Amino acid sequence: MLFLFGFAGLWGETAAAQLWEDAPPAVDRKTGSVKMGDGYLDFLLQPSGYPPRPAENYPKSGVTGPTVVRYATGEAPGTIVIETQRRALFLVQDNGKAIRYAVGVGREGFGWSGTEYISAKREWPDWRPPADMLARRPDLPVHMPGGPDNPLGARALYLGDTLYRIHGSNEPETVGQQSSSGCFRMRNEDVIDLYRRVKVGTKVVVL
Image (cartoon, rainbow, N blue to C red):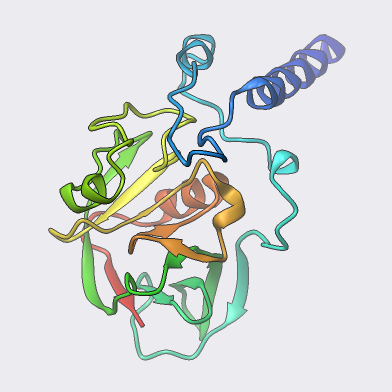
């Protein structure tokens, strides 16, 4: 019986990894246009929603997962502090520590700083590019349903009434880089971890 459960678990991990391995790329590297893909088959095969992409299938970007570090700050435990120059997000803990996550930040001309609060949380969120982005990129879809091909990835934390979010990504190789339009990108498994730890109303300080 234990053998059968173990085999089933192994098959599930292998199947999830194969789904991701077989999935089409989200962005055409030549034209830069977003590909919708056929991720809905994946969704139908996973009753609980899309599986997070297996970590071993991520490109070797040198980005590490969440790490508990010493962190000196005057912010209260539970606060998110994003240091854009370091491309790091810190979830402040007790006793002078924080959980550090890697993030991708706004490219030149799109960076910002200030204080906001998480106003909403979404699992596998839909994506609606803002008007200024559509003006720059008319090839983008006006609306894209949530799923593994969606640029917002597995989870999104919305910041106040701004257009900015902390979210996952279908391009994990951009995490740790300066490449977004002002949002903060995380690997899907990292944003899932953060999503579970914070709630609506959490303070977010961007430095």
